[in-house]
Length: 228
Image (tube, rainbow, N blue to C red; front, side, top):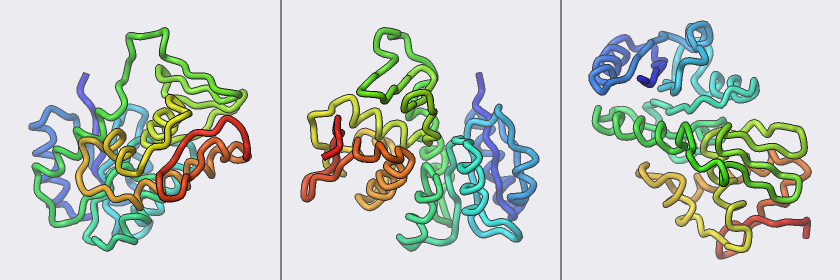
């Protein structure tokens, strides 16, 4: 089944070039010229959004933040002329899965799209290992959901993968580079600060169970069974 991508950019030339290239790669592509237009066109059939940051009206950052607050965890790759590290971290902080600075090469876009789409398999054949339960945390790799008790935690794909990695090996401390090598293994230019931003967002979503993830100063992050 072909993956369906929504491109959101107010520059028609960019939409046309990206559409042509991604369709040649085998994807189904829709385009929107604004964030407001994207809200109308976005459907459950879309598997990824390529989202421009600087647009008239609602910005890409605002759209991403709106989708995440509504519980929509569709993968988002930002396209932007901004290349400062703080701007990149802002993108990750509002729920982006990746970030591409303009001007970009079509090969880079293709590689980033493939990397984000294949991070989490759609199906698992090993039903015996499809669910991980620790304390009152349940992680289901089949449905790609994490729950505390009966409450679903609204995680992005990247946040889910970080939580699953740490919870799968609760006695192990992972350095930031080790987390990058697992979660972002096919994505270049990810910094250690990017890991920190995602961990901060993940702990916030865990609420009063934020102690599940702790920072070992000078080493990295690990999963905790109980509050310390």
